[in-house]
Length: 253
Ligand SMILES: NC(=O)c1ccc[n+]([C@@H]2O[C@H](COP(=O)([O-])OP(=O)(O)OC[C@H]3O[C@@H](n4cnc5c(N)ncnc54)[C@H](OP(=O)(O)O)[C@@H]3O)[C@@H](O)[C@H]2O)c1
Image (tube, rainbow, N blue to C red; front, top):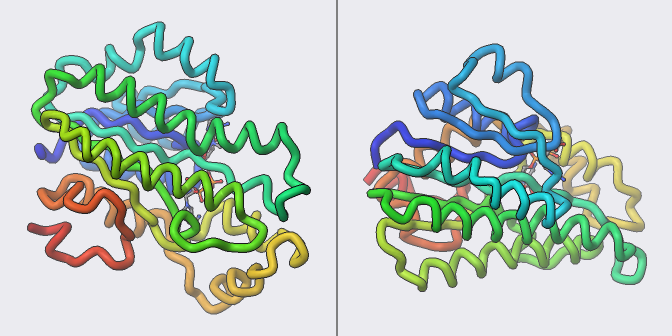
């Protein structure tokens, strides 16, 4: 893939998404960021290289209306290389089945599953003449291992993993897709995990220890590794993968 592509990143306002957007902008790409809030720091650094859309991805009807209006297609059409990174995600509702609540479940499924699938479909349609198009879902180890208290989060990340496998099976021209667990990263989501009462998330102490023991990655380090992986020839060779166990060859080859 050319090192410069048009890149769509969800959840670019903070955390890992902000670092991913920053890494691609530093690399010279045009970036379209979708979040409920703008990222003023990136806007100040990169000006018109960054376009931002304030959108609440927990409302599928609003996302469908925005897609119908054609901004995504206009950003992507005609570009030889295009990338979609489905990064925005919610951890809540945390707690056992029976104490999550219908509204919170619907909101999380909309952000974690419906939005990435809707954006992927629109991205594939808009890039049908592209020479090289790549979709990355930001998944989690929780999509592959079951954790008490995280059934919603685990199920939504497993959905992204299986979506990537099935879209890869579609074998569409010039399209590669992967669902990637990025490791444990020092963001607001980790602070949210550490603030969860033990009775709602029994494994919380493991995450407390990772923080106190310096075991968290920085968003910037993860974003740099992720950029190298997304731009590498090996991207998509495995539909479901983990940044921590990617062989260097998968990135560099
Ligand atoms: N941090 C970790 O250790 C870790 C580990 C494994 C996987 N992940 C995954 O990595 C991704 C990023 O996580 P993070 O740690 O950076 O989380 P974060 O700090 O909580 O940031 C979440 C991002 O998602 C956006 N977002 C949330 N709800 C939204 C909505 N309704 N509409 C539009 N955007 C929304 C937020 O923007 P606004 O609030 O401006 O809308 C924000 O930019 C997530 O998919 C997460 O599951 C994180």
